[in-house]
Image 1 (cartoon, one colour):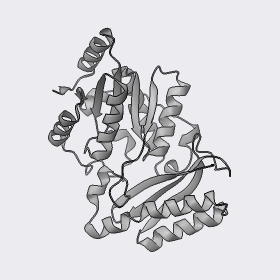
Image 2 (image 1 turned 60 degrees about the vertical axis):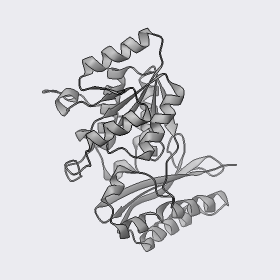
Image 3 (image 1 turned 45 degrees about the horizontal axis):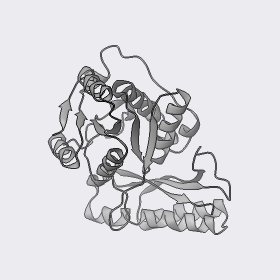
Length: 281
């Protein structure tokens, strides 16, 4: 049965009890509205650890004033049922005041892989992510934490955070889970109409076409411009970015190195992100 706790003190007490027994603990941070992509992260955690902790917290510090904090899907009862079925051992479901008490005045800022891409359009996003993730690591003291590769820039930022602050845990990146048409699983997919869903499912195909062209020696600038045009012609309303980056640092991609093609595009009221690998081999 999944234990549910709402306070940091209760979370720490349970995790420390497990660690006193010599058990390995994994953390999966989420904002809830759980789907099969989240479940894949839990499975990855359970394969690597004796106990799995899942946090469910819609983090206000990573939303800009113009973004969808109030509308972000919240379905705690359904989420807890899903955790139970997945075999998760503990759910941490704090309120905002538990995470950010009155007078909270600290922020974590990570440079390097946070530069550009998402930051060009959401300047405060990664400071909000790094702050809440840093707090979760300190609060839960896990041996490892699992993040999805769909949010690839976020994964790179979290790895850099752990490296630079010498935090004693391993960060595991788990492959993106997609539907039968290749659309990356996302809580925000729930916003899409049937017509928008059909359009959204074209995004990954466009990225794979671009990655294949780069692997075949195509010019990067020409390929990225073509990919941007393909996204618009598929029916998206706007493209925030489509870019090739090195897979470890997110610095500009260099030919004959492993990389990623990353995209953020807007469709109606929904903003979708995705990425695919560029293989150097």
